[in-house]
Amino acid sequence: MKAIKRTALGLAMAAALAPAAQADDKLSVSGFVDMSFVYTDNDGAASESVAGLDQAELNFGYDFGNKLTVTADVEYQNESEGVDLEQAFLTYALTDTFSVKAGRFLSYSGWETEEPTGLFQYSGTGYAKHFYGYYQQGVSGLYSGDGFAAAVSVVNSLAGPTDTEAGQVGVETMLAFMPSDDITIKGFYSVEGDNTYLNAWASYSMDALTLAFEYNTAEYADNSDGIGYLAMANYSFGDSGITVRFHDYEIEDAAGLTKEDGSAITLSPSYTVNDNLLMVFEYRMDSSDSMGDKDTIAIEALVTF
Image (cartoon, rainbow, N blue to C red; front, side, top):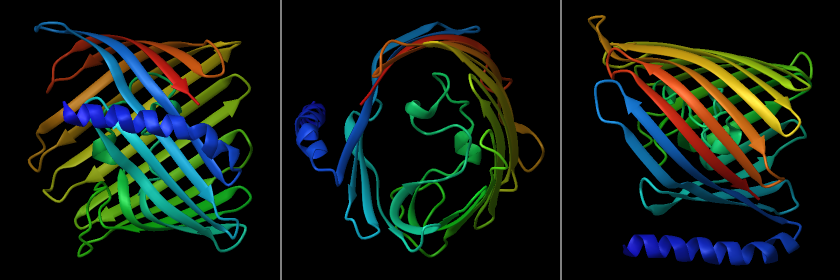
């Protein structure tokens, strides 16, 4: 109970400071509040209903004006019932096309973003933990030119935001091609010890239509391996939009037996109420030999500022 009270107080203080912070053009403040109702019909088991605050976040950025910026994100998640420093890093622009950042930051890899503000639907696939990097501590260099970008990150752990042990580092590499304003193609190859990950995705976005396809493979230190992919289409019309997504993945052990698997079809309409409030509705049908089948209905209210 004490942790919850401290959380509420901290968010209230940060919100009160936000207007003053925005008055300084070197300091920027943004964030979001994410709430939802989710009903799950589990095949062969009792149904479940949950409702409440999923997540709230405040993002702070400061531009020192001499090619140096600092970013810090403070997050509250209802699952942990506490406040976390999600990421904090400094960025130095050596040239107009090359910059270096250091601290705790989110991996570049993966089509689907970690935050709800970057998703086209309510839910993520659920396979990110097997194929994507996560929040990391280390150093990353990014080159971004005309139609091409490349990055290399050297981190303590590919998916360990609190890991400070630098004995066995992880390395994440990225190549990105943007042959036109409408097409983006990105590929990631990451290594940490005997774990290797390959993530590649491509997107096409023109006017109201966005199409995306992603492919993942991984080999793990215990000789297990994984494969996963998704295909997604989003179309917007006025203040409304609709997303259709299919994804599938499978993780096999060293003997070739399935440890975890899952596929789902997701249908997600959305409606922009105003500049700050987005309503997202979702119907998802999951099928899994290892975890069972289920149908899910979700309603999300996402407030951004």
